[in-house]
Image 1 (spheres, rainbow, N blue to C red):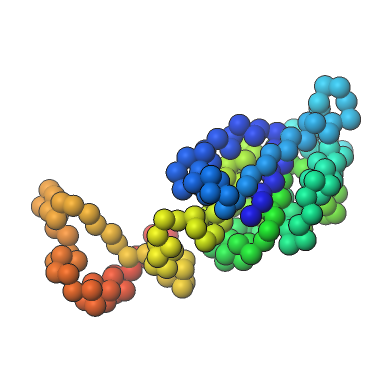
Image 2 (cartoon, protein in one colour):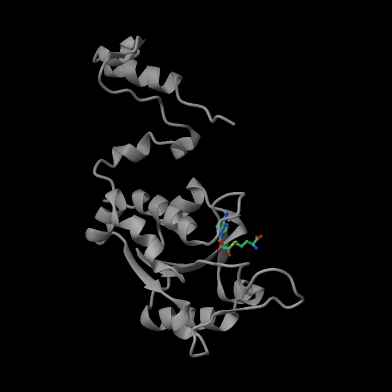
Length: 217
Ligand code: SAM
């Protein structure tokens, strides 16, 4: 899957250079490209934001540099199975189902907002959907985009060393993962459930299904 990220701060995506996702990049399961809308600013200073019409605090990202960035991406790539996403706290909640549905895409374009947000005309006319990662406000879309890319990438065939990791995982089959333990078998008087030590796989599976975790809230 090709991922194009529209961001003022590509450095914030350094987190993707580690662990499972870095392997997905090295193995060409995902390819990530960065686009800075400042390159498409219509002024020599690279300003891409302006004061909001009607007054109010903060600055708003302008339509034109974002529009030109999307046009440049479209000019360079020719995928038809592509989705353009804008990140917003007001967007559709990104969850396991949205992530799974997205694994069939050939290209995902993610627009990261900053400041007070993005000119509504860009959101209304230049993107397919807006996504939120939760009911809170971040300073920008970059960390949200990292979460989204990490989530989708690990669902793609070949990313995880053992694809079985996905089958028992939380949200797969609408259930939560089971409790996990590792050595030692006893610590500070806390013992690992006996059934997990007996090697009987049928009993272990039954125990795990009975003891699946529940959400804390
Ligand atoms: N004024 C906006 C509001 O109250 O809804 C908040 C803007 S926020 C400071 C700047 C940018 O961060 C947004 O344009 C969006 O791209 C990103 N962002 C903030 N919270 C987010 C969330 N929960 N999910 C996804 N993106 C988010």
